[in-house]
Amino acid sequence: MPTTEVNQDHFSDIPTIEGLRLSYESCFTCGVSWYDHHISLDCAECGGYALQRPCPECGGKCSSYWTRNCAISHEKRRATWEGKCLCK
Ligand SMILES: [Zn+2]
Ligand SMILES: [Zn+2]
Image (cartoon, rainbow, N blue to C red):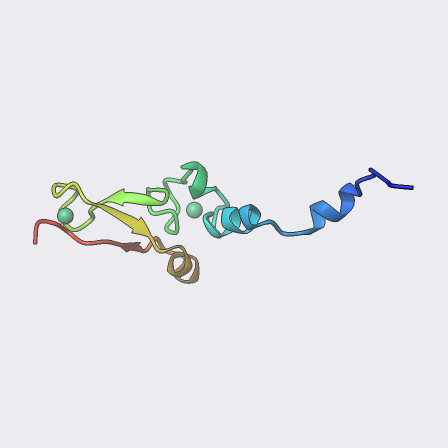
């Protein structure tokens, strides 16, 4: 006899790709989700921006956007960005 019963408990125990991504793209210090564009202004790991920020070298004049390096931001507990200033 075929069963259509779904054991919900099993599903909630499996870490989903989306779940891992959400915790990776979140601040380990204050717990906000950068993925959802949340930041804490007084948090060094957030650094004032979520996953992207205007070029820090020229203050955004070159209109390039730098991307957060989540792994290093987590490790150093400080916002770390990757990108190139187009002014140079
Ligand atoms: Zn934070
Ligand atoms: Zn620049």
